[in-house]
Length: 237
Image 1 (cartoon, rainbow, N blue to C red):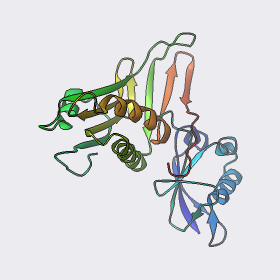
Image 2 (image 1 turned 180 degrees about the horizontal axis):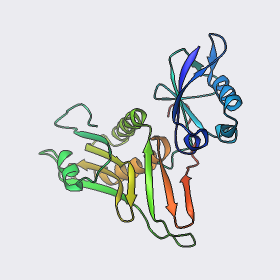
Image 3 (image 1 turned 30 degrees about the horizontal axis):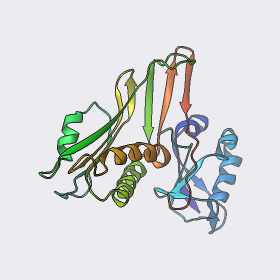
């Protein structure tokens, strides 16, 4: 049977391409079978497939999960890194942005007549890190449909833990970013400052770093490399 393979970040570099068809023997296969076939046909991937995270049709997948003909199977390293249904009382924004955006506009988009507080986390490209070389710029890449779905999942988890949060915005930049530019903004609003907006924004960025498939490539004067995380998704992520 034939499936579509999607590769991201380091794996895409090693294979020399990000999407291609793969033929599996027989009519029944698992993620483990796909890994073995990929390693055999693309030896340069073998060292990276052991730690790579997998997804089938934009949902995390595990070793024994079945794969069917026509499935889209993605492999990517641990994460380094659109709008929801309109609800005037619980507005949400989820977006992968390839150009600069206004934080004020995002806050306005998640503000309701009952909003009295908003907490905004903004990540930036850091040019200097103590003990490390200087960063010239970063390039961000995302598995777009899955990234948006996982942003929505992060928002759902926030609402479960902090039910008084009103609006949620999660915007991730993709493409080339220079030192000092925003990379990610997570904003949460609530009626009062003590109704979870601080905690929700902190949880949002921490959770995004775990399960939203976005990666960054760091460019330095001495070369470039993908920055990979360490969290391996579990059942339920």
